[in-house]
Length: 446
Image (cartoon, rainbow, N blue to C red; front, side, top):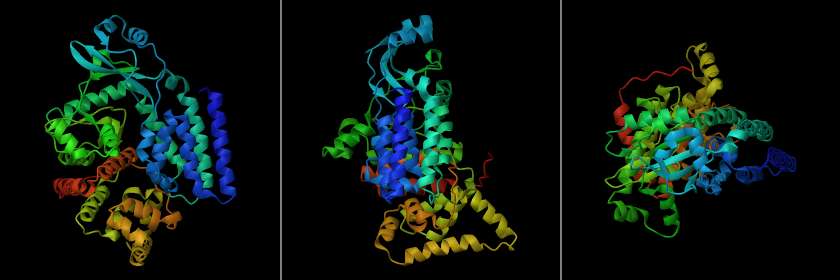
């Protein structure tokens, strides 16, 4: 699709959003943006992913299949043999393609099967169309984000902040040298892990535009979800195919996903179903390292938040303690200013106390939807969309640790789809909470 075509589609999408807002049909905005961005694909889908995760104005998209936006990529028509030769020169003769057609694709790259030094490998190629159009597309998304903020003025999350985060993430995800470096770091970090498997990266045949890694088999989570939709018992299927226990695999993955945020300051950033493969011996393979999920800067508050989630999954929710931890982690500049003001009031927490008390009153009101969300352990959704509905507390959240939030949401969504959320999340939070309890963490600097 040409730049002018995408520009015209964004203009028409913006006009539809404005008409809906002016006619009082704001509840239709999220679905309209969803459809419009999906049609454009690529980086527009990445923006949609972040909006779904962060903005309460787009939470109605929960009615759609959230994973649907992760599997809409189409293939670029690439002469892969010519590209290998242009990137690698004589070394290209050492790579034997299984097929000239890709077997998988993402928003920015597409993947081919091959062999190298008698090993099965994958060759991931950065799409030429992405290289040509990315800067233009990011400018269009920046303009669209301003319009979204205009028609969602009461949102606690700014679409422009989400866009800035998208630009940073996209630049990193299309830097294949950076991705190869991170893949090598992950391989070394988990080389002896009892459950996690990271494929080896062949640095000598990886360049700015392609990455070569060992091929990983197994059953992907995306295939597992498709089988589940057909009525297959996925736990039994994994047991039959690999001899592994799906719950054990998910607990091991979730525990490491959370724990590494404290241990390393980053964690695996892209756990959508196509990037997770279940193997024999209770092992889980992770592929695609374009995203590092940076942990929230306020690690002490995040430690308290983890403890509150542990309480929830053990049937002991404390909405007051949870709200305070959440505000400390994601409250942004507003909460920083409140804290500074309160320090002048002899350490009285007047403002935060008022917010927390308002939250508790809403819970005590007995609304069945509110109670259901609490019982379903959906505390973040509860706070942002019920307690803080229409941004009644007048907060502007920072998108701090955005990739980490996205990774956590994707993993939790997967446990729900497999019907094992409580079974997986309770031991995950219990284990991580025990391992970090009593340890002292310091806030990270910008």
